[in-house]
Image 1 (cartoon, rainbow, N blue to C red):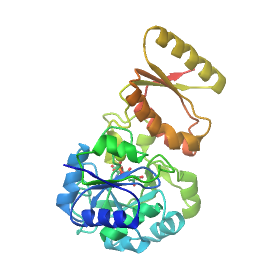
Image 2: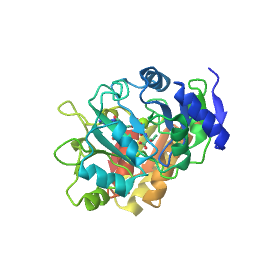
Image 3: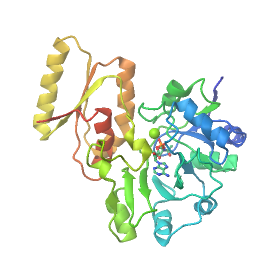
Image 4: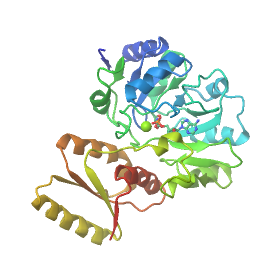
Length: 328
Ligand code: TXA
Ligand code: MG
């Protein structure tokens, strides 16, 4: 398959929208990461997404809309709390799980009776959705298991020849995927942390917001994460990766020492350090992909303090490192 490369001109976005409407697949930028879009109501189109990504078919997709009101075409149950979330955080990086209407094919929801809905703040994303005239199912536009794409070139690396089009837009502002909140239970529960934090959501709803247990404990045989996608090996660079946790100065010393030792053994070592959480979110996936391109054997990465956005980025770092942590 020849993948058409689009710019962000109106004409190109219109054509990308047409491809989506006709059942094709197009990767497009959002404020979080690039998405791989398909008509969410067309089971044949949705099926192709799983094939292109090599994604397990029990992993549901987020349905993207371009206006708040479009949520009513996907669900009959929009509670007052869901309305508050839509008003407070949309358009933006919050994905809300609600009960699904029957018109949504099971292939889009991974066989679940619920659906994840998000209205992105990216103008380009919203225009493509508008031009397509349909809700757009879009997982991150990476091959399954690889770090999410935060640049157009990442989509080309993973998806060229596998999908109909790629829109080369700006680098993603946030750099990690949206916060996913389940609103179908007795109380709101975060299934995947993101840049919109539990504290902010709790403040908006004026009630306690839980975290899925899988965000604190390494899921084992006795329980699994409530978001099916959180159970897979994710964000994994080719290299072995070690996270160093502890007091900043000591961690940095330990990393330099280890870097020296391993380099002397002939390994190609990459060191990843971040000065603040915003930069960490923005750059993490890009750096992991760069390590793959550089042929890195070992990545030594400084852990973040697990608060606010630091908690969300650490969720990805821990998976990238397969929970390989050295406490200093
Ligand atoms: O920022 C984002 O959310 C990006 C951009 C493209 O919008 N999309 C994204 O999609 O990260 P994806 O498919 O890579 O991750 C969606 C996550 C998965 O962990 C999936 O299992 C979970 O959301 N999810 C989707 N629908 C769900 C549902 N009905 N119940 C529970 N988890 C759900
Ligand atoms: Mg993903």
